[in-house]
Amino acid sequence: MILAVDGGGTKTVALIVDESSYRLLGAGISGPSNVRSVTAITSRKNILKAIKNAERMAGMVQISDSIYGIAGYGDSIAATAEINSIIESIDTLSPANPVITNDGEAAAYLVTMGNDGIVTAVGTGSVGAYIKGGVLHRVGGWSYLTDDAASGYWIARKGLEMAEKSYDGFIGETVLVQKFEDYFKLSLRDLVADLESHFNKRVMASLAMIVDKAAMEGDAISNDVLKLAAGEIELMIDGMKRQFDSPVTTGCVGGVMQSSKIREVVSGIYENLKIFYGYHVAIGNAMRLMKKRDEAIRDSLVSQLDAIIPELSRTEKDLLFIK
Image: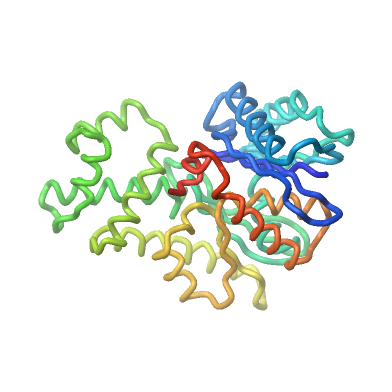
């Protein structure tokens, strides 16, 4: 049995897979493990919790190999050393040394199966990656201060910006003002002040769901925000396409792709676009560890994971933004 873990700024997903039958035996979800977002203690705790949840579902199994794709790995010498230390302290399940990578590599493998291709990962934050000649290249993902385009955080911030402009009478009315006030049970000015003084990137990113719901209900300004996000995804994909002389596999991964409006816009631009959600990324790690480039196996694991989702606890579903 193999253990595949994906850890990011909002959630950590652990999967246990039978590599002989390609059956998904267990899945566990916990909070963030990106060391740029949380402390090393919190990161370790959440990775362990996700693994234990997966073990509980899988039952008594023996792990032979493991792989961890953790956001922040490779970003800096300090972050890489910190993640190495965390994984070394908890990986006592498998006899072999664990494979440790960046979560972006898992997303790229999920889409491309290790072949040349392009992926945009749009979740709490965002980053682009492309594989060319077997080499992974990263673009975007500079920081939430200057980039994270089309991410949940970016959509939420843009939604709040539009709500403020509407409140001040600079643009037309939007239901976002009332929806944000109802959500926080504060006036718009007070909630913005509270968000600034108690900044939490994950809380901010979760507000993207409010913007998406408002757009689905017909709010024009919310719809425009989602169109802007889709445009940023298009910008990333087109930028990476310039690295290739011929068409390559292209996909979008992440929680933002749960928005039907964004999926509709982006799918209308790119033919045969592959779309996966954030909790699917750990499957990319599993495929990489098994050294498999078989899309049928990948798609089967995706379907199996989707079938497991209803069995998760309410807390785990909340981390996936699934109601």
